[in-house]
Image (cartoon, protein in one colour):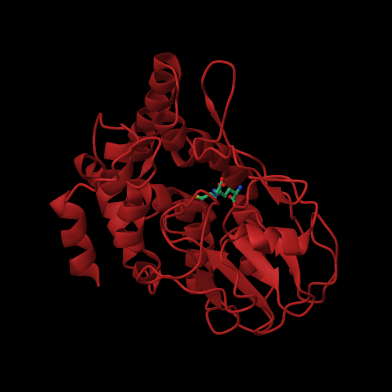
Length: 321
Ligand SMILES: N[C@@H](CCC(=O)N[C@@H](CS)C(=O)NCC(=O)O)C(=O)O
C-alpha cells in the first residue's frame, strides 16, 4: 500500500485483520461525484459535470467491486461515453499492474506500470491501498471517485440527459428496502467470502462461512420473482450477481466457502443466469481473469496452481455467449 505517497515494501495482499483474525476492508478515499451540471454530489467536491469521453474507468475483471461499475455502465448504455482500462488479473508485489496479460490494457493516459501511480498522481501524499475501480477525470487529471457504490449510483443518474434510460438502479420508492438489504449482502456475501478466505483463525472463518450460507439460503427462499425486488432489476441485484458468478469457480475453492455451490441452489442459479443474459452483462464476466486472479493470491495458494474445473461454469458461459 501507499504511505504518504510512497509504496511500502511490507505490503501484504492479505490486508488488515482485527484482533480476532477477521479480515478488514479499507474504506475508499476519493468520493467526488459526476453530476449532470457539475454541482457537488452527496460527498466530495463539485466540478465534475457529465461529459462524453471525459472520464475513464480503471478496473480489474477479477474484482467484484469493479464489476459492479462495469455492469452499471453496460446496462445504462454508457460504453461510448466512459472508456475503460483493464489491469492485469494477478496482483504484483506493487499491487495492480498494467498490460501484458491477454485482455488487459496498458495505461493509455500516463503509461503507468502500476495503478498506485495513478493514486500518487491524484494525491502525492496519498496513504492507503491503491484499489480498483478508480474513476479518473481526464480533463482535470484528478481522481473522481474510487468507491464502487458511489460510481454505480452516479452512472444511474448523471448521464440521464445524454443517454436516457428506463432502467433505474436505485429507484426512489425502493431506497429504504435497498438500503436495508445492501449492507447484509455486503457483509455476509460480497465481503463475507473474503472474510472466510482471509480469516487467520478458525473462529473467524467459521463465523464468515456461516454468514455466507445463511444469506445464500435466505436469498434462495426470498427469490420468488425474477429479481430481489420482484420484477425490478436494481443495484442490489448487481451487487449479488458479482459474487454469485465468482462463487463456484473461485470462492468455493480458494476461499474455502465449500459447504455448497451456487449450482446447488435452483433459484439462485436461475437468477444468476437471468442476469448474465441481460444485454452486455456477459461482456463484463471474464472467467479467465477471475480464476487466474484469485488462484494467484500467493498467501492462499503459494504455487499459483489453477484448478481446471468446475465444468458447469464454463458450460454456462459458453451457452450464454
Ligand atoms: N470500497 C472499494 C473496494 C474495492 C476493492 O477492495 N478492490 C480490490 C480488488 S477486488 C483492490 O483493488 N484491492 C487492492 C488492494 O487492496 O491493494 C469499492 O467498493 O470500490
